[in-house]
Length: 406
Image 1 (tube, one colour):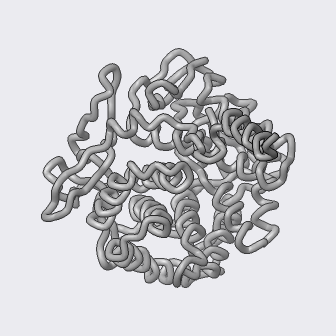
Image 2 (tube, rainbow, N blue to C red):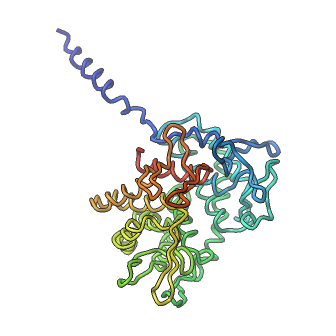
Image 3 (tube, rainbow, N blue to C red):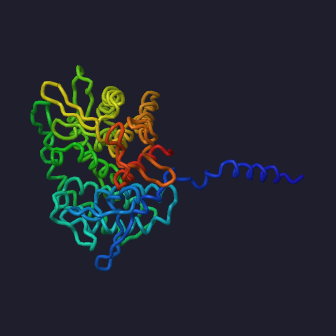
């Protein structure tokens, strides 16, 4: 008997029983997101983008009158979805879209590090709308998140000319960082405790996303942001609510005396900072958030907004609930669970993700596996916003990618 035969039989059996070992299968459905993707020619460049809005029941893209057809906010985040699909799941067919969106982000940024946000259907930049004027804040940070994702893609699929432009655009943020962080470690005293003076716009929610950019780039090529990572992370810790007598103990303020579930990525950002710096105060801060504030949110049906008075009393608003906020909470808990292997954290992460699966106040599955749509939100216990725009779709897809399944 040929001794090779048993080996061949075993090999064939293994391949049949483990078809996903060599070519991993993505857990997300990109159909709806790709239906929102389009392009516009500006000069000699074909710029790709994703439409902001798509309303039920047709789910065809629509234009926002005051804003435009697309924005850096959404393209920057969608680039992270594409990065995972291309680099982890070998979706080379998505490369033209990713590179076209990279050119869009370059188009929307300036040499001085300031960014615009919206463009009109003819490809002209909306320079006057209040959330599109050239600044270094939300849309700048989201654009930089996108460029950091493109940079990772180009490590596997080189384009030297595009890479050179992207590196230059990324470094254009450095002077803004230096300016903001110059006041470190000065603090000011407020009614809610000591507050740092060195965060962009004094807004920890913006700076949590900035931290994503710095962490993703740090250690690659000439990107060395460890000092900046430490300073921004220190600022986020200073914005944690510390009141053992309050059910909100451990909460991260998003703005002044406000927490909102329109994102809040401080927990994930601090854990990523801990991974680089090994500074235990970042891990301890997130554990406090997970041990005290997350159970409060889970027990109170995933609130939308909380405002705290100086005496510790607070007002809470329940609706709306959106994918952006749920993803941020899930991402933090999932990261902490993966890091600590703590069963309680694993269970809490799953309870948060279950919002997408229908374990929510409206008892509605928010993600359609067959279409790839994520509904825009829950307005009340009896009303779901069935529109499916870019933000909700992207944030849901990012959550599923992080979990690895739906």
